[in-house]
Image (tube, rainbow, N blue to C red; front, side, top):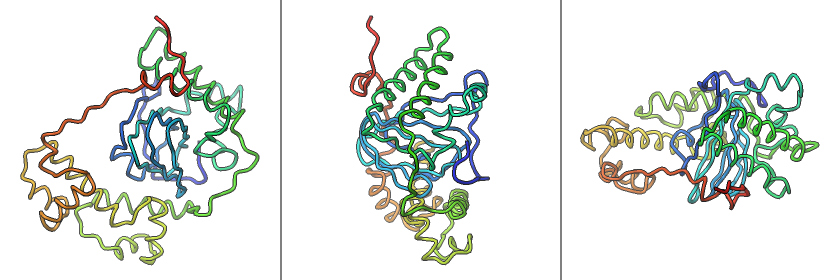
Length: 310
């Protein structure tokens, strides 16, 4: 499925050939989701709790508990949490459904016609949204329990999900947002973010970043902010902090050495920015443990699922 343009920089997702589905909960928003990225797979997100927002192809979509979002292949996107976010993420290979497409050409229409007849954020006021939530929870239950022939059940439930979206959430026409970013502009911003990610410690200036894609600093900054939800230099700071966080967790190196390697000029500046953006001091990272826990049981009834009885 292609979005509103062709993007040659998309990431390839590697799936199992027998069962091309990756499914799990994300607690909060990981650094991977905060980075601008696009991939050749299709994705379904359901918000189990909390709030946040996606920026997809330059459009902002605020989400809350119970919302469902569709991410098309090549959609340039990033996500941010605003409070207590738990999100179910289903990533799958569209090729798994090619045989069904020959029988029903519209089965993947919610992705194929994204931006034309479907929005990335499904209408939360639609009366069928509860049925979609229940299907997604059933898919996760089958995926996690791995009962006999669970792959076939997941396949069938995903097909039913596509049919319901196509049948009940299709719009005659979808008006583009006022802040639409063109495909060419999206390509340019992604090119710059890739260079920033490869060289985060380099002392980039706004002028140097803009020059990479032949834009004026002010024009570049405006497009970047609409695409990524923040300024180019703040995005760079977050990349550096992410690298520093990883080094703090995985090495015994001195904090000063890590700060210098990640592009911070002084230890005091590093400590200040780290605490502001990460929420704790760098020295605390090595003593804190992150606990990740699937929340499917606790949210099952709240989001419309019908748990099995013993």
